[in-house]
Length: 192
Image 1: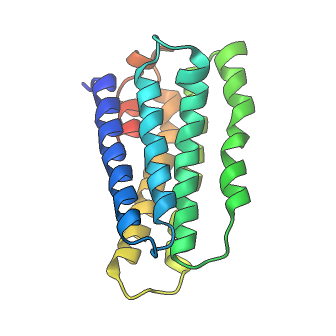
Image 2 (image 1 turned 45 degrees about the vertical axis):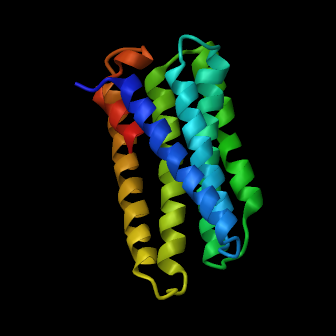
């Protein structure tokens, strides 16, 4: 139903454009705290998508491990940017260390016991955690007078819930241990 490589290219283009726009806005209005981190996060997600699309043409450590760790760093930097924008205490150590939690299981389930469903569930649960952290901070922070703050809080909580449901259902819908043949679950996960 979905062509996974096409969805990855669409994801790379949209997040790359988003990251570039944030970078341009940062250059124009560099007083807005957190915008540079949002830009870096989106650009990392875009680069990760390119590495995922190149799977089969580049080594596994780049197309699986590095790409998925970059996705998590992208979400962690977006979370850190939100905290800076909302003027909450900085948690840069958490943003830098959180994606590294994924490395041991990812290396194990890539090289020693290859299992796509477990890798997909791990990455999706970590993305759920990042979205939940963003939503939590946006909901609990003092209201800055713009409705976009609440809208973003609902967006991150909805996407976090969606990622959680996908993580729960992924082991049941993974028919093949091939990235291109994993079906709609992974395609929809990557697209959102």
